Amino acid sequence: MSRIILTSELLNNLLTNDKITLLEKYQKKSGKNHFFTPTISLKLYKPKITWIDAQKKNLSFSFVKHENLSLYTFLKNVNNSLTTLYKNKVYNPVTTISPFFIEKGDYFYLKCYLPNINKTYYINSFFNDKEEVFIPPILNSIYDYVIVDIKNIWEKDKNAGFNLELKECYINTK
Image 1: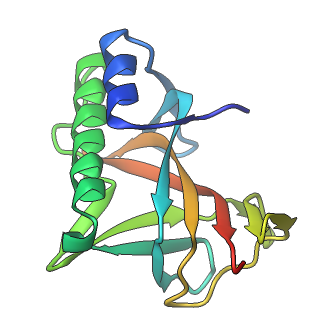
Image 2: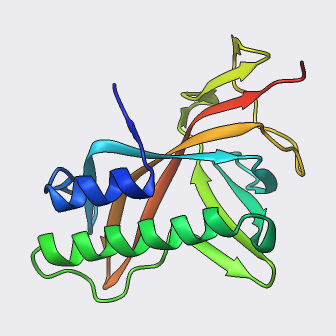
């Protein structure tokens, strides 16, 4: 599956030329998902792992805001642009959508799902350019870079938010 790694210019071109669409799919019990097509992704450099849930299904990356101002500005632009796309393309959209990153003081955070079935992770993991089985990292680990897919916007009970998935991670010690 091919993915598009977003840049500001590329995102603007995709939106201007109406090249990003939303596919609606109903959830099993209630609610909807609006999947972005084609697959759009973020490449994040030097993310620090600051939280992993007990079931090892989600983790959070953190960044120091003043050290990553261009990333911070870029993420705000992506979030605003995709929210606007959703509100313009979806019939009866939810008014308020939780952003895909949060700010707390001098930091901002992205929560990502770790796609897996029975602890078999579907994440490409590379150590010194060699592919290895993905193992959930320990807290405060720092990857050289990761690729995160912006999968969809979910809706349920007048709430909505983004789903992000970790797809690739890279560490080089050379």
